[in-house]
Length: 376
Image (cartoon, rainbow, N blue to C red; front, side, top):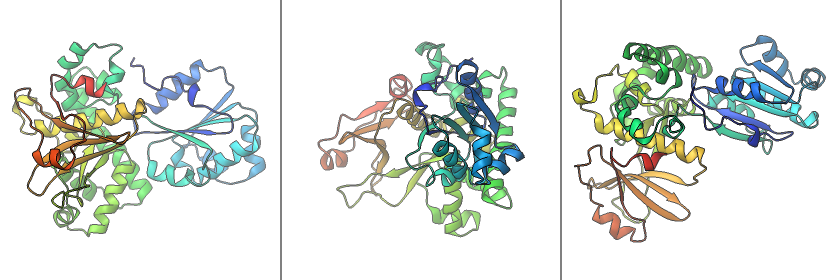
């Protein structure tokens, strides 16, 4: 069993505050909860947002009934809380009305849960995000040599818990296809009231082939034969349901710097490959650069989130096609990173960057040889 970074939730629990745990479907939120509850000395009550009775109760804003439900416990735990209408108000009643109570709520769709809890729980919540298994979470069981030996597997099949523990390629593919077809689209279609999944799948396919490249909403709209506003709405939904995440362009000094476009990366390489049904080995693929960049961007995001490394992330590119894959702005400093799969592929810092940002930190090239220091 893989020990998660947030295995012990006690440091994040406070009286009369809610701990909100976001994350994709099937990423291990329920397992994390059960593991924590098996060890806690707190008297708790666990319910799921799937329960119609709980939906009715906590969305009712009926103070006496909600207080009666919660007052006998020290900890209220609500799994898949985004399925409960007006859950923010329900949790607010609990944390405001019951002395010393603690609350945990999980959600796989931040666009729904965040909208419901945002205003009601202002100043009353702590938020964590649980991702697919991070490389840094594997290190207690696998040393750096072992991780490098399994790197191809992570690039192709990703790191969802079920996928990592599956024994065969066929099992891994089946799990990933089920994730894409059953869970991902089920959530979005239900919660966003979208009539059909074909346009979403087509959009994800287009994004899959553009990993590492700037994305034009107008081009996406033209390819899908829908309007630009709809494309923007769908991209927002896909981001808030933890399927893709966006990197914006960095620009401060040069007129030639690209500012209007974004890059989109998948939260998991396996999901990206499942969308295009491409699970071939690396020696028979022409997209290794995209796989490598998606893997590094996402693993770096996990590390920064788990280790509280605060700052902003961007890409940098000029109209003359000079570019840097990742710029991190931390503590007033700029850190440029370039990603190269092969150690033999040399990368030089663009002169335009050096001229425009002479105070930036040293240009770093992340390869398949030195990558673990960057993401663990």
